[in-house]
Image 1 (cartoon, rainbow, N blue to C red):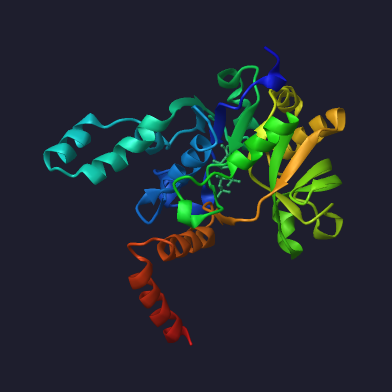
Image 2 (cartoon, rainbow, N blue to C red):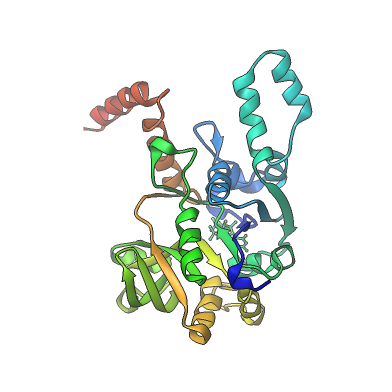
Length: 304
Ligand code: UTP
């Protein structure tokens, strides 16, 4: 079967990073298990994938990530205990994630960056296009339909139309752009989609090709593995940069698209992103909205 006609059913979620910004918590527990209210943040990433039609999820993991593997598995003992106590809502909560996808685990034993983590999934992916979702980037476009929320679906739809490598971007104003991979636009396809002519990892603000920063969702073709294999370790960061590999793929193929994300993004890898997520999810949660708004109002009064 030809690659370009295949559906996107596999997703890679790299979760092998050191998580240094969340130490000491991440000494033993992966940051992807940090909860937003009572839900580990990784659930939102898994649901983003599954709601876009993904069946097989390949986690790229490392040491200290046992909790994540356990979380995606069934727990018959706990299920029985909840059943005996007639706690059906809670039972459904713990059964949900193990039931919605197949989970495959591959290891990245040395943290050589995102590009290397993606390369570790090569044999689990085979010769088909696949989705890539970063394990710490929570993207929400509709809090009212949080269970059906899927930003990845927008990328999958675009892929189905053009059958091209597609990445998600967000407008970032000012100097903050220096923390991201940034794209250069060759042509606007329509108001939310672009054909690209360059990708640059963490450019200087003055040289950034646009204000469009690459964020945590991609649809990649299997050819990207050849580019990743040939990518040198960046001497400044000690990492293999995914952005550089996509940039070289773009130079050879001239067919990488970007889709503009307009919703809310929470960078769960940093403490402020984590805090903002707690506040927004609580304010959008039927059970907590009213009481939590009061708590917040009092806090704001106290600050004044
Ligand atoms: P980050 O840049 O957030 O790095 O990685 P990190 O190690 O997780 O966190 P800090 O910067 O030390 O606090 C972005 C994504 O790429 C994965 C991470 O797990 C995260 O989902 N990653 C990063 C890997 O899987 N392997 C790596 O070598 C680096």
